[in-house]
Image 1 (cartoon, rainbow, N blue to C red):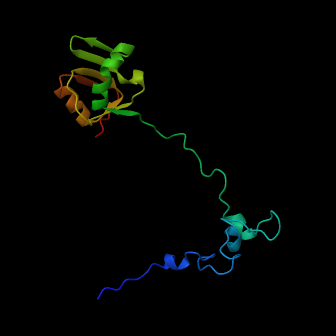
Image 2 (image 1 turned 45 degrees about the horizontal axis):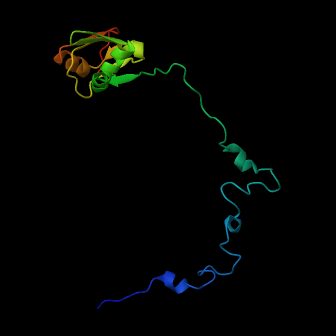
Image 3 (image 1 turned 30 degrees about the vertical axis):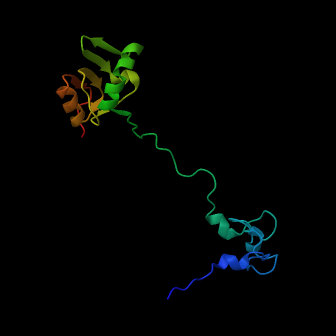
Length: 151
C-alpha cells in the first residue's frame, strides 16, 4: 500500500516563524552569541586568557631561503613554441634543425611529456631520461650542463 506523506514545509506555509517559536528566537547570530570568536572577552575589547594562547592571526613560520625552485618544460611545449622562439631570436634554425639554449628563456629542466617531431638541439641544466630519449628519437640532441640525470 502506498503512503503519501506531505512535506513538512507545506505545514509552515503562511506561518510567521516556520516552527521556530517566538519571533525573537532564531533571529540571527545574536541568538548564539555572535559569529566566530565574538564575545571572547568579559568586557569591551579585552579577551580571556584562554584565547591568548591559541591566537592565530598574522604571519607564522618562516620562509626557507635555501629552497631550490626548478622551472621545467615538456618536450611537447618546446615543439609547440619553437617557431615563435626563432622569431624572437631565442632559438636558431639551420635547415630543418633548431638550436636552443633553454636557460635563455628561464627553463632549468626538460621533461619528457608529449611528442616532438622536429630535430632540436637543446642545451639545458638538467633533463629527464625520457626527454633525452624523445629528442634523440626525433633526430635532435640534448646537452646537459649538470652531471646528474634525473628521471
